[in-house]
Length: 286
Image (cartoon, rainbow, N blue to C red; front, side, top):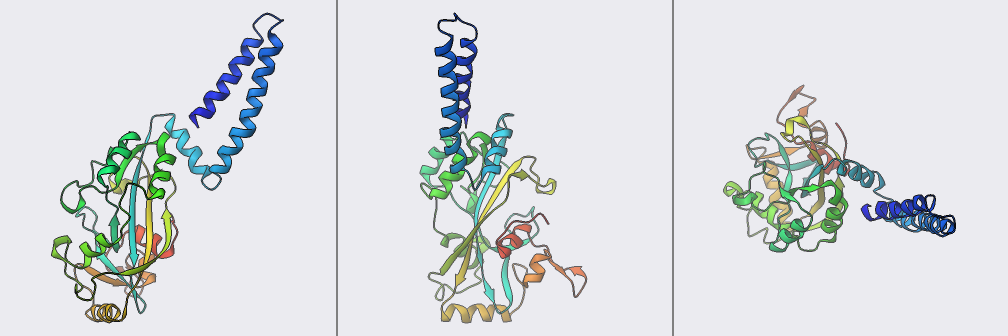
């Protein structure tokens, strides 16, 4: 975008110079300036709009706030949809500041190479997120708005970053976070799943209750667990035991109501808003 604007400025400078120099040179400068301007608008302009046709609004919005030196907070995660009968498995969020439940999953991690990539984009750490223990290296960063598209292109290329989805499943259900051994390792030495969709929020202001005062984009890669026979049996046994402090089994209706039980006319427990986006495979305001 910046190079596009600089080229236009060069063309305009040639035209302006043409109107202010000797008449014998005026046609060359003015003509050259207009030819350059038209060429840029047709070729570069078409290339820009074609390349960003599916995210034109985001591209223009990012460019606009970049003029004011703004940063965008990116949080890049994956989430598992685990359904048994008509209920979905949710786990307690590890952050004590967010008293809610969500689908199994979490943020991608950085690799050693990731740091150099982020440094090249002038990205900075999200200092509000924990950087120790299991949260160390989470892919939650602030990126200059001028590099927003570059960051998304890099992330979606899957280069120089974590691409496995096993870690969070293991940490949350097999013995990672707070020693949560919810499932038996002998039945879950691995998991199969299918990728459903990447759900990305628009470029928006972070809600006040989140604790951030910034622009943000959140992305969730949604995965559907495909259990084998023994895994399915154990999940059914887990469902039969009911809810606990750490896990909840919620209906689609309750997830869409973020924990509100219409039968009891009360909120049984809080469910994170992104749980609804993951379930419905789309972002929504409310």
